[in-house]
Amino acid sequence: MEYFHITPDRGFLEDPVSSFLDGLTLTLNRAGHQERDATAQCGDRIGGDFEIIFLVGGESTITIGNLQRQVHPGDLVLIPPFTKNKIQTTRENPHDNFWFHFDLYPVYRHTGFLDRMGCSSGNGSLLHIGLANSLPHMASLAGSEMIERRPGFHLVLKSVLLNLIIAGMRQCLSEQVSPGMAAPIALTPLYPVLDRAFEYIRQHIGERFFIPDLCRHLAVSESFLDKVFKEILNTSPGKYIQFMKIKHAEQLLKVQGLSVLEVSNRLGFSSPFYFSSVFRRHFGLSPTRYLRQCN
Image (cartoon, rainbow, N blue to C red):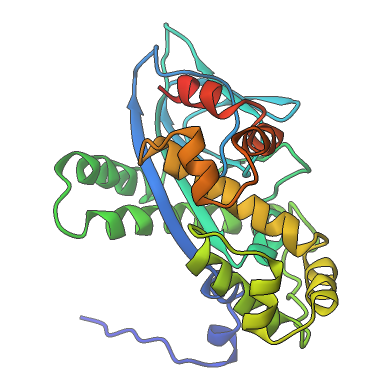
């Protein structure tokens, strides 16, 4: 029997896919399996997180943004957050797919992630990663884990998702889908401030807090914090906090079943009307209509 080992040489340490993903925190929100069900279709919808769909059988027609794609077995589809999409199948050959909703942190790496997954602006991506590998077996494993829910099932599902992401990035590299995908992210002295800001926002997202509270915690001025966000994320601290609150509001409405008034008060919006208008701006629907669509 032969013995193999990997020596941590320069090439090992500079693996571009692993080094990029090592800098991300992946949070799996939910997952599912649509198995040859012709009724398992989704009309126009918008989600607040990333979604990956891996087709192992049948056919799908998936519209992301303004681009419609025919999806076949072995295809991997990535739908970015807050992107309008629609999923359809046929009665003659209904789709068999596995889907995963997830978030990635820090947010400033979203652009790099989308680039490495071959995403065109606003239209997601479709990559053929094939079925002649271990991925169909892993997808089948995910299906059984979803049903049995044995201890550790969440980490198994997360590992399947990570393998699908790696397969997508490898495919992009082999096809050279995006010329800039291997470019490293240039860090500046502003990044530690941004990371601390993200951490504070995540810890206090379910509470009432405002920009001055965040600045006091970071020991920086409001003008400096504004500079950090605009230079790295091209947005203001206020808009980013609003973005994160709306993502959290989606979970409070769908998972905890809180009312629009309760969510508005908990997240510090000035009124339920203002909360509803901000929610509509991101999801394209009022909170009430969005919940009705989900149900």
